[in-house]
Length: 324
Image (tube, rainbow, N blue to C red; front, side):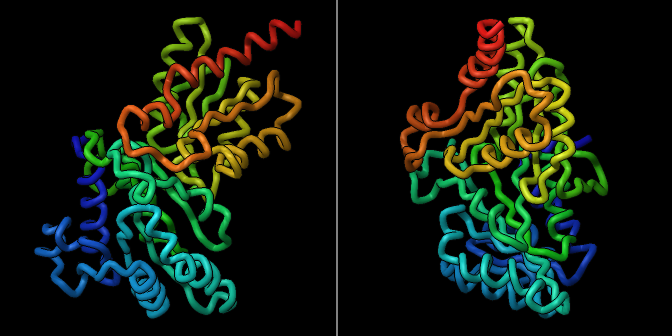
């Protein structure tokens, strides 16, 4: 095992894929400046800075993908994706279907998201559910350095456009990453902590909050299972339902706001397919439906925290005892 930051794990994945496949290239906002080691190894034809023009960046990537390249684009902050919605949603997501499979569009769009750097609402907005809702796109949002590397490699090799969200506050967090070839398949969740009493389902950095909540619950004799979705589309329904049926109680946690979020889809899946196994209602713990604050203390109040999650999970047992 090697110890890498999330940022270095992404760089390692990019370098390995660019060595493996000469069709892989990267361009975007400041990539040649931020990834000097890639520029030195692969040259300006395969890694290059672009103007701050998100629609042009995404449009060029769609064209490059259609011509057989495998572009990786860095859109910097997630809200900037709104300036490339036509190119990503209306072109990249639909053209393979419209062409009857004659063309494929293997591109990866990387964007930073989430609280922790106090960058303000115009640079911080969790948009993942928008793209999960868009046909033809895949969406990834890991929580560990190993998964950032393994999922980026899978995303680059996939023949469909993939939105790859990077949590800003995790960028310089160290984690264990396997040496050599390391692939994590798209569409497969993982169990971060096994448990029998309640299931905590999350993705991105709120997985950490769920793990901390599980420790708080264990002090009360409640053993929580923590599921890290990792891939939001395709979504690992089997992992969700297996855990829900085992514990009978589910809490879904994410930083994005509640209305029409990924948590709503997970709750619907559990209600539709595992209702008879439930011992209590499915709960969602999210951020409020307001723009993200730029103050760090307010960011902490804005984001789901371990004590809030633990309290919500414990309430499922209280409610059951009161009904009994």
